[in-house]
Length: 216
Image 1 (cartoon, rainbow, N blue to C red):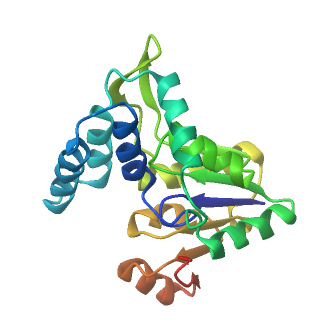
Image 2 (image 1 turned 120 degrees about the vertical axis):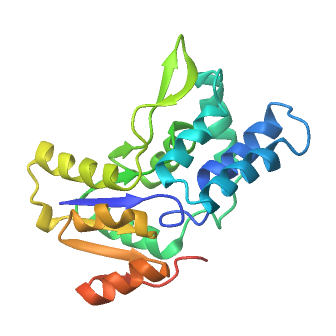
């Protein structure tokens, strides 16, 4: 069996991309206020109704020119700076049960390698499928292949079951936001984490498992 886990606010309690960006800008010596300006721009776009995948693409444009190796280093330092509240304990408990049962653990996220690599190592994930920034000579171009958001998560989950030969009906998936609906619908054992009103209402209509707020 495969257990698929969304990461931000499902497996962990924060939005990794924003937390990492704040840390990274400070780490590379940006002046105070640089993070607030970028974050405000992204949040304003979301508030205007810009699709979540397009906001995701905009995030990576702010990192154009960054060295992938330097970002990896920054990601490790960012992860090491987190405290015990980073992980959602109830979701981690579920992940450990799956791992103990011999299930494959797959993380799916719109986030990227500096954040996801240390998280995946910490929980013993088998695969990590995130948004892949395009590189040129080891540096981010500012563009990405496909944001791992919404329908892309559902497609990735379906592809993983085909590659492994595991029936989708036997797989589980965990998500916290309505954008995770395609992922949850791709498996036979969907689990809604937290209290997104649209996703929770959908779960109740369809008899899905609800995992109460996973915050510590």
